[in-house]
Image (cartoon, rainbow, N blue to C red; front, side, top):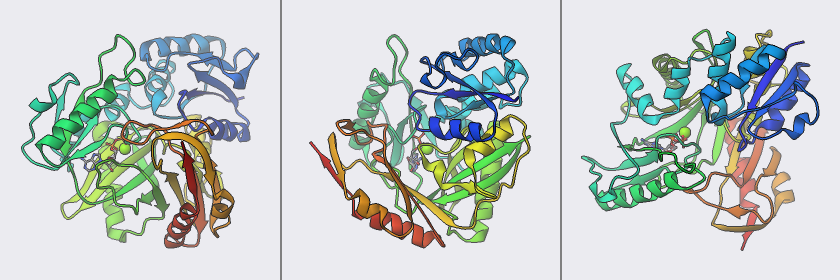
Length: 408
Ligand SMILES: Nc1ncnc2c1ncn2[C@@H]1O[C@H](COP(=O)(O)OP(=O)(O)O)[C@@H](O)[C@H]1O
Ligand SMILES: [Mg+2]
């Protein structure tokens, strides 16, 4: 029987979806995580405890485990485990992204250098240690975006329009990268990148790489403007309503970006901006779409994205990579204000909106709500399907209007 190692970072939303996809495939699942896994309680060979932040140690743990329990695939389920997955797959001779390519995709400065060297549109940038005096950070032009080199989910991403705004944004990002949740005791805080703000519409691309060839699985429009000062994600809708020629440009630019970075195998999630000067790659991550957003995607006869990813990694036959005909979308529910979550009212009314297929509140009642730029959790996710993308967007907006978040 095929045996796969799912590498599950503790902050992920996606454990259940990956485990269910693996079980549907009748493969044997080993859960690799930082803490003993309740999913594999008691069965030897079904769980592996390892440090996902230490690639060499993770690699050794995987090698040792695989001597007793041979592995056919290593699947990182989210950002936090892509590096250990690449190191482990290299050690076992499984198809994988080069470690350096994955590392580059997680370092916003290195990523910019590789994209620029390949002739792709890239914002001008400079990188500063977190300890730099914020008043001493210059910028030749404005607006700029200030962000940590390796966080995700728009955490710590702030737009600044003038020198005072830049100093304030820098100080705020510096305190985020120094906070204990981001910077373990004794470690060096992440550096901070300051780059040109790129105006334009933003889209996301979901893709699967096989032997260096990119198959674009979906292009998502982000119909809410993302102009800052913070960049909270809200609605994603696919298929894209952009003109066909623009979508071709998006596909070609994303493929060129994966080549520039050196990514060759497995899922990618890219974000691009489009304006009169062309397509600009903001990011390419060596993982699939985050949060619970993958629930918008079904392929062929209803196959979930997680199943495609596991099949590809385990070299099992791949079914159709064509997305279903319906339009689909998700709203990452914004956090309205800081506080303790008491109640989310109107959930039944929201679910009753035609087209709404799901609503999941992911912050527990009594849990704390931390808005961006400090926060790293969504209030929840709401899903819709309809004949066309405009209906999906309208359904999500109407359902969201019916929700009332009660905080204290
Ligand atoms: N240079 C930029 N110009 C315009 N918007 C930006 C820029 N950098 C980041 N953003 C906005 O912030 C969001 C998050 O930034 P990103 O670099 O993708 O970091 P993260 O890893 O947190 O997703 C982007 O999706 C985009 O909306
Ligand atoms: Mg991003």
